Image (cartoon, rainbow, N blue to C red; front, side, top):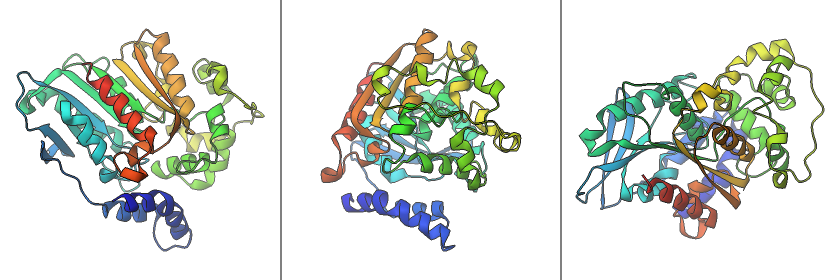
Length: 363
């Protein structure tokens, strides 16, 4: 398994991109095929069952040991750019997390076959179902935490925002976002510049995958990187929330402010989805943000998305939402996928999972 995951992340992505450019295999299909060949993991201490919540496939992990009280529950949204199922990449971390709780792993529909916002809707639908039926699984409905990595962090933020004003279901107790993608307005923040060519998730790959996820032409990539999709009026409106000036100085070493680029109306029209809170939760109004549950945000220094997490942390704190923040200096985007793979596991992988588990244990 260790060798397989190493080959997956180091070899699969560039090979898949080349395969697509040659017309052999679509990139996302090849990555799914290889990821799907990874071995499954089981734990004798857990009862693992595949179910459907209002039509959405989920995998539920339940502790076999009896409990004097109801378990806390964790809803987990996986990463993978909304296009990959990456079940096996997260199984070991899921098993570790749920030794002190019940965990539901959501297998939302994938893009590009299922067009956006099918993924968000699946996450929301299944989350509501679980909140309503938690007691059927021995879970305390008042102790449910939502968690996700990468785009799963996007879904975590969005689901919490969508449910913030609902009074007909139990409230989500807390949210955990692990190196989340939270905005698509500015791709010239300090972390974008510093980590533009970082392995696994470069800046180019971030924008290209986002366009693929939305079923958009990847030729729009350069315009988005330059900021040509954002009208001046939109920039002015959201500058109070998305602005390199809001990033702490210690994270801005060698940062160079970009040269402003005029908006191209056609590009803006073609990419309007990027301004929706389903894609950019950072754009939610204060009236929503102030009602969100307590949060844990985990960022990594060597991650192109680092500053998304830093900006969301500030937004939450400015609205009096309690935030627990962990920053992994040696961490990189996708590191949680290496958790538990012996010699291929990184210290940052264990740190992230441990931080998430310790936060969850507090509820």
